[in-house]
Length: 265
Length: 300
Image 1: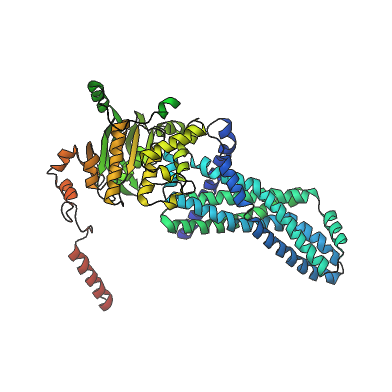
Image 2: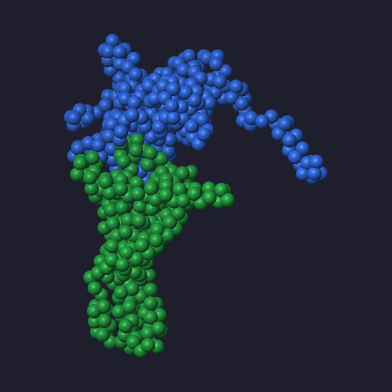
């Protein structure tokens, strides 16, 4: 009995320590992002941030669009199946619009980005730890948080909402194609339905989620990468952990914020 | 500042004023006292005392796993001691906060075992990085300085290459150019010649000597390469089992009777440092095994 309590307690402590580590990375990162440059402690690495922004957006936009486009189409078929029996197929447009902006856009882009950017950030930083590059930074009086974490975190915070916005549009477009081609809807009718159903608050909640998911992916990936121990095997483990833990984190945050928006707004 | 750094370092040594050099040589720049460190309850350092004096090349030698790199990592403030103190330029490294530690760190350079070049940057950017981050020099001057530092290690042509395109020896040379980018007072070398061919080893040794004579750099070299150690050392310290077992000039070390040092220098497989590292007696271990097996088989 006491053994079981011990295991549970240790597991719980482990989770708390992990969250503490993420919090440290996040707040130290934000400090170096805002206060560091103001207090002239260390400048922001603009070029590196730009490079990371490109990596997060242009290089991933193709796969994000592909996934969202298909999910939009699938969702349209599935909704049509239910709505047809009620005789209100045209509401497919409303449902796709709301589902995409409030939920599917941020969630799916978050998932794709975790696999795409999170894994590569963790692997990159992990390799730097193993090859002594991070120690070299520290010993060279360069703070690894400012030097490595800030460009990646800032890039994720700037680009994630933009990618989610594009992904959401593409998803709605996927539904639109199905609606017009297979569900006998007029394209004008579909558009008006979508536009009428969407309110500013839907976009806002979607973008808030995007911002949170983006930061989460970057923070988890940086934390996993920087805490690598023990060579190439450690890098592999960190990469896997970065993906799985980000996905769990995103789902939990998604639930918390969806519930919060539901009860508040 | 700019005019001073633009002066190419003298490659031939000019004998400085005798008395002042004597005084400088006695000034202690690094003092390690009673340093102890354990990793997950396994003691690595068991009370290290040593001093590094200005302008000298101190070689810290010892077998793999004796803790010599750990000592080095305490000196650069990456590890914190469990016990004891590490003073660099008269300041206790452990007491310093990030800003203070960083201002100490700007006064030394480090060559890591693997070179530790930043793989995402070109060779030129690697050498330029400390200058860009820690000085207000303009890009033109930084470019000139990068060329000068790379010329010192004989790799001016390699400036646009990526680290992945370099051989191991070239990586170390570039690492060396980066280590001296800020004209440091101390340079730490972590196994500078490990894994290099004899000629490149000779080149690295020559560079270490050139930096000492030409720029008055104090060097702390961690190595187990004895040929190289005797070529560069002014003083040597031998570590074994987390303690300093001998120190002195290369001459004294070469002629010592201390058995551990002798075994190390001569490369004897067995001696005070045992060939077999198991603590339990072989016979007891085997007999124990047989007994256990019997007990299991016959239920004794």
